[in-house]
Length: 272
Picture 1 (tube, rainbow, N blue to C red):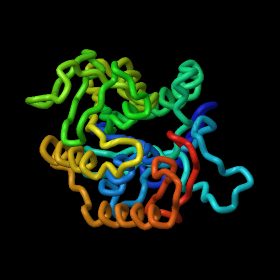
Picture 2: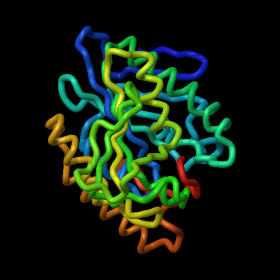
Picture 3: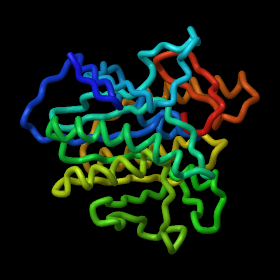
Picture 4: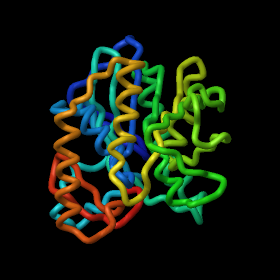
């Protein structure tokens, strides 16, 4: 069973509409430094997706490529418990700092379509989980680096920080987020003004690192605030795969995408 619009195809394999309020966590697994990938695999563990999303707006090089399984593309929704769900965003269109309008045009239709589906299915909260690795890509005095032990929570409803470190490295907190991480809570705040729309951001060691500590920081926040169960076994397995791939390849690890659902690939882009 499923539904389709001009922007989104929804395949509901094990899903029914209920009146129970739900919470959504989401991250992008193809971000550099791998904090998103490690976190996603820790949340998913051995779970099977309840819903799959496909769209022309996802950045997937599947055409004519028999090494890529279409079922590994798009986005997948997993049930964590009775009220909490996790949306794993697979590949995303490369971030284009020189043409923000292109990022908006490729991001807004998809995020908007997913938010409509979430609203129809009685979700009340959207929480985007990421790291500040993009600050290393910008290398700007405006967007300073944050250590991976630090965590920042920003509410899209109030456009203010609700949680910052007790002793932050930088006195002035500014976050640059990739288009989907920025837009998801931003759009959701308009869809559901009475709900919750958060960006939860850990610091980062940099583009060519493995942000294991950033992943730990995000996991600790999830466990402390929502008692979310996370599979350390899946995180360790993914970490081992990343290190193995690093040993086999001379490419920068920020250009390497590894998932626990298939063979590692090198797609050569920053987001996607």
